[in-house]
Every structure is written in structure tokens, then in C-alpha cells.
Image (cartoon, rainbow, N blue to C red; front, side):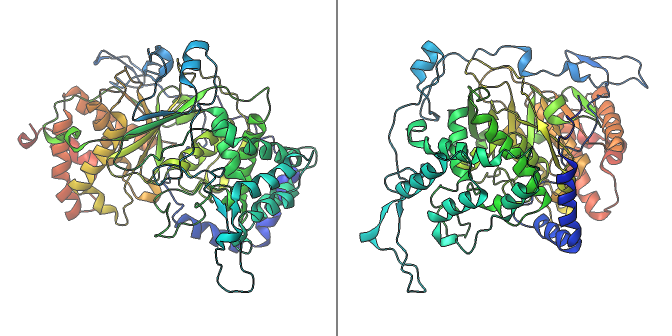
Length: 589
């Protein structure tokens, strides 16, 4: 299935190209600067490609059923990979406990299959999300005749009163302009009046042909959705903090309401990233950074985001399910002793074509994540993780409550919905129209979609990745995500060149690391090389050799240990060649 044709008009493309061509050097410098900023994330994106899968051959119950196609192979076909759709996992009734917060009424859901808000109370506390509608969120007066902004306690009033007054004014209109949106946001964020720009949002509005421009009628609907926060989210939302395994389940409607507030930049204490800021260890959530410093990238992102809001504000298309966000922390006692691991290699499918989020549907889809979830999705980043978040905007809400991931942690999102097609990546990325997600739902009304966010190491010097402590870190990080935590039979894994590109990872090494972690977790691996035919062929060859000879994870770890000094002595030595030549050495047996 190829991406749907871009329904963009030539008029819009010409406007974008004209603006870029007016100062191409400035545009190039801007992208180069952003490429190296904190917003940058792993480079190897979902490259645009045909969805026709090159099929290897079958593996059944761990034994190769060799067929002849080009040549005999021990790899398996994509259709043989286990997916969530292949079996109905018996989850049992939806339930909450100390580590699982549920924001809907569990009893009503279990008995009537209705989604109602869970009653609760607001908590203005460091362990919980500080909500825009909290009574403790105050708007301070500004002393205009002073260079220093001073808080005047006597003149403080509820910040939500200010927010709701402006949003009610917007929501009451049939149409609202970008200027109206800008004025509303600045009214309750006065400190940033001269700092925040809205030129990307203005440009989107200006270059969109009148017949396609629905934004003016959509802005009031987003404002109305944001205003429902006090009734949609009653229960305090805990922060998913480092060092603690915990989960949050909420409805897709609740997510849309939270994101509507992010659109209108209402979340308090979330507008600075300074090291001593309260939320310095969390990603940004307010959309102000997406609205300013226009670029073609941001225009395309905004088109996808606006389409999402169009869907969730329409009663006929509003999603009616649940989504779970689960932070998992791998304890040090659960970390494998890789050198002595006896696990045999798992089944493997390798292809240079296709996309993780399409051909890998129903599998555990790997998000090549930034340790700050979402990476540069609210900036100019448009690589694998950011694209994933743009076409699945519900993922963005994870930035509200997920602290920076540690080396032994991951985030698993179950049930998110894809809303858009796309083509390209980076500067070539384009929103390619609406996507109708046909994924089935599980017993908890979640889409049968699992996305795993794991962050690879960023190597300034490429040779550092071959140090065994770094290889072990990456093995533990991948295993943390692949392990499976719910006691059910888990789907196989759809992944690719995790941590390569901008993070300087070696695709050969990263492929073997993920193969080892998958074997330990007893899960198959579908590896997408994103157009890299050479890697596909070489990985297939080395896998066949190791599989045929029964090389275990522990043996492979020892081979990597021996490769490390060899690579430091000669940077040109090839990992796959080294394994092929040394795989029968007695020191590895």
C-alpha cells in the first residue's frame, strides 16, 4: 500500500517554494542549526518507499523450512511474524492499582462499556501534572514601570479565569483568525509577548487556498475542546518519573482535550527549558515552538496537526477508545548476563522496502526515540520519531508527563491511532492526506497498536560505540523494551537502523544488538533497512551463517568483545567479516 497522494494544491507548493527560494542560504543555515540542536533525534527515518515486501523464506518452530527463491534462506516471511491481531490476549477487566492510573470510570467501563470521566481531585504537587485549570495556578500582575517583573500577591487571580475568558470568546465565534489565536495565547502568557512568534501559523493560513482553508472555522472548535478540561480530566495525572515503573490509561477524548490545551499553550510552568526550571527534565508540551520561526517542515507538520484536530472536534469522527502509556524500568537484577546467555537467535525477516508503521502494523513498532520523548516534534525535527508523532498526534501527550528516559528505561504506548499519511522525511516530508485507521481494538478499547520508545546513545566519535560498556548499555536498553511485562504472549518486533545516522550508530552493530535482545526476549524481529539493499543482503548472509551453526547470544557477545579491540586498532575492519572469520574460534565456545 503506497502512501495516499498528496492533496496539496500547486498554489500552496508554489508559495512555499517561492518563500524558500527568496533566501535559500538562510533556509539551509536554519535547518543545519536545527539539525544539531537539542531537538535533533536519530536520523534514520521511515524513508519513502514502496510497500511491496521482499520475502525471505519460512521458519517454523525454530527450524528452517528452506525454499528456493534466489537462494536458500533461513529468514522468514513477513506474514509469519506474530502480530497483535493474530490472537486475542485475555486482558481481563480494566483495573487500576498503585502503578496504573486510570482516568476513566473503571466500573462503568467494565459493566456498560461506556467511557466516563473518573471523579477525582486536583493535586498541585511535584509528583503530578500541574493543570491549567487548577485553583493553585495563579496569574500574576506585571509591574509595567519596572525592568523587573514582580509578583503582586494582592492582585493575583486564577489563571484559568483568564484562560477561559479568552477561549470562551474564541469558541463563541463562527470563525477566528490566527491573530485572534495569538492574542488569546499572549493574554495569559504576557511574559512571552516579545519572545514568541506565530509566523508559521500565519504562513500556513496565508498560503492555503481558500477552498482548502478550514482553519478559521476550526480554531473556535479547538478552543471549545480546551475549555472542557475541568470536566474531562478530574483525576490528577501522575508524572511518569525516572526509576519508577508506572502506567497511565486515558481516553482518546481526554487526550484530545489535553492537546487542545497544549495548542493554546495553557500548561503552567512549561515554557522554559533552563537547567534549574521545575520541568527541566521533561520535554516541552505547549505548542508555541511549533508556531514560530516558520519553515516548510513546520508548515507540513501543522497541516497534519490541524487535520487531527479537525477529526477529534467532529462528532462523527471523534475517536472513542483508550490509550495506555507505560514507563518500564529494568531492574539491575533483571539485566541479563549476556556473556553466558544460551538463547538461540530468533526468527528474522529482513527487507529493504516498506515502512515500520505500515508493514509492521500489529507488531511492537520501535520508535527510534530521543531520551526526551518526541524529540523535535514541536520544533523543526522531522526524522523517524518526529514523523511517527506527527502522524499519530496522540503520542505527543506523553511529553506532558514523561520524564527523560534513563539508560534502563523505555516507554510503551498501546492504542494510539494513526490519523495521517505522509511521504518523505526531513526537508522532503509532506503531509499526504487523511489516514483511516482500521486497527482492531482490544478488550480495553485500545487500538491493537504498540509503539516502543527506546533511545540509543549518541556517539560523537563513532569508534566509541564498540566499547563493551556501550554495547552492553544498548543491549540492556533494547532488552528493556523487548522484554514484555504483562505476562501475555507478545507480538514480534518491527525495527530498523535504530540509533544510526545523526547518532552515528553502525547499522551492522545495531542490527546484531537488537537481534540479541529479541532472542533473549523470545521474540521475532522484522528488520527494515529503509532502502539499504547492501545491509539487507549482508545481514541476511551473516544471520544465515550464525543460525545454521547454532551460535547463541552469549557466543555472539564474546565475538563482539573480541571485535572491540580490533576495531580500535583498525577502524576499517568490518564487523560482519570479522564474525564470519572468527565465529568458530575456541574462545567463543
